[in-house]
Image (cartoon, rainbow, N blue to C red; front, top):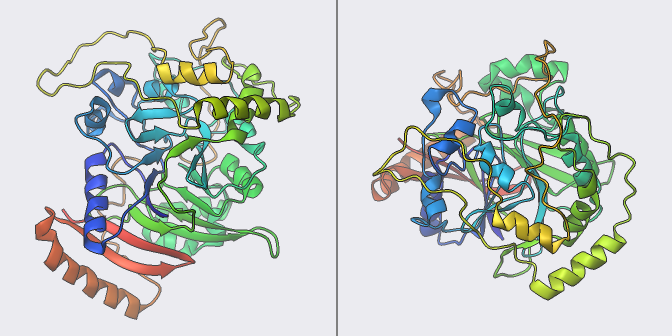
Length: 452
């Protein structure tokens, strides 16, 4: 199975899909799946941008609305998680996961699905120690505080993922697991990202929650984004134990390492996104302690005997099949011919997919529960464990830092290859070009960028 892994999307779906099409045509291969590691920005209309935590000058419609409306259809099945620049109001509609657009599946704030026989798990958002133990109290319309806290990872979702016992093949997180730099060439990393050095040396760069999950789940592959750079690592779990191949990628910008192709052994296709039986059983078991206020969740003592849940889930999936509920639009789509500047908040609609999902598991709908106070906590002067503010435009984007590979010879050969491919192919696809085929730390990948 050939899987394209993308870093931060930032709404540039058209560009990423064009790149994938270009790879397929020039290398005569078929990409089976696209995975996006957050900052997807599933913005459907002008109102959604009010829930997007970015400075006003970066609030652009980009291209997701075309796929939501049906004007365009994703040419390859796409699975994504959320980051810290999202239309959080829309992702809350799909808390448990669902189709954000036809052929584009959101894993939920935490989730596991199957694609063929490949098991893919993910955790949306980024880690923030101040909000980690709180419940999911934020509801749209968000204020200046909740528009940021809404995308902070919660202990409840991590606790559910920690219950997984069956093997995970791929795991997605937006921020990197804490300590992952110890397993790769961090000195090379800080040559390009000098401001990472102090956090790496102090052991504060990354997510504690993601590190816990990495240690527990031990997936074969772990993909991340957030820090707008490429980084690879190889994690050996205990002596002689399984290994995790870690890959972080950049954002979709000219000349950046934002996309790679990973070839994973799998059963033959065709493939489709399907519900995962174990994850549905965990979801059903823990939904009764879903913390929906600002209070700390009380779920640690929940006894996890999922056999009864699995029996129900298995029988339901046998009856209806394992394909997720069908996509449904819940709001009007952006119309470039009739832009709307002044809109009024109309609440958070119940997404039919989520309603159907909960009916499948015999669970009540609670996402619009506002029965208890959910005011934001008083602002704190505590320092975050690490900075969550990775700007849309990085501070070092304008620095003249050359891309340096492991050896001078490799760098020279790759440079010649990039130059030749650019000369041959860039006129054919309006400046897009595949750049390097390489073998790196047990990952056979195609490294892709695009040229302005």
